Length: 312
Ligand code: CP
Image 1 (cartoon, helix red, strand yellow):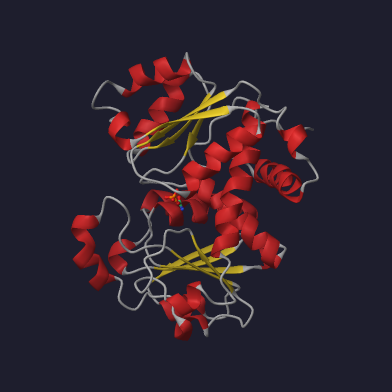
Image 2 (cartoon, rainbow, N blue to C red):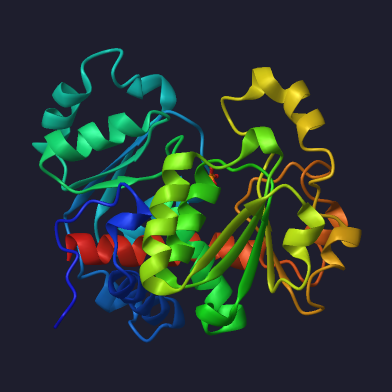
């Protein structure tokens, strides 16, 4: 049966099935390789509009959505943090109803995950989570496509996450569970992933033979891994906790010594932006094992494919 995502929202990565994720990647790879030429892509969403509602700054996510809409023949309208103030200037539902009568889809980076859920419920148009404090599903789509491009069969790959058990980690847990991958997470005890996400990932993993483990030993997580993935210790909006967090995360830096615990051909991922010298060293981020810039490029390919499927 043909897989359709027409008119669908993506609030959590777990809104997609394994088959739907594979379909996003099939389209992404065809567009990326040129198998679907630009002239054909431009006919996917002519005259269609995407509102970008961002309450935090962005390079990759915004760039991916804006370039994607241009390449699909449509148009993206960006609303900056100072413009948005969603839930402050007016109720989320009122903004959602206005947007739904005006644009064809919404990509929302809103700290409050519940605001993205409310937008999806009230707007009447597809809403894509462009990052909340709970999840970053667009990041997860690019992450595991990058792993598959480098390593092949995802069920045979061991992925180590070293760092904060926050939004990027949450979506990674869920997509690894959906796709039957093996993920070992090492976080300081006070920065573990949320229990509700762990429960959901475990529930999905029972059906897929995925293995999701959580601990606090970075060396143990990385030992023998095919992929070593990290993220910043101080995410946007956590600046007041910066001093405390830098202490909490000591021992969780991805540096040469830690990477030597992984397989010799392991790749390194980072969702970027990186805080060089904190969670990752220059020699690793600039080194031959780093795939973080392939990963960043795949943000465009996966977001364009997602939009093509939603709007197509
Ligand atoms: N990784 C990521 O979402 O990057 P931006 O914050 O620049 O969009």
